[in-house]
Length: 117
Image (cartoon, helix red, strand yellow):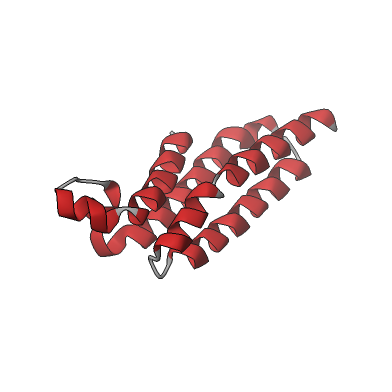
């Protein structure tokens, strides 16, 4: 479920890049559907990703590396907000293309947690 919110977040960032063109051809995207709430929704989607992963993995007691990674993901979410808040094509595209770092950070936190056991 957390991954679904992650997909919604980065897909909406990408949809914001093409919003003007999509409106011209009548295409419906998440960015168009969310309207002026697009930025808030993206941040909410990312926060739901972090919350769901945190709740799901907390029972595994992964330790400091995992929780540090979760903190770094939150920092990346804040950075994404600064990139998309003005809804520029460049900022939204940078946020979209930088999204892999969220996945890498989560993976690294989990892998390091297991490696240090």
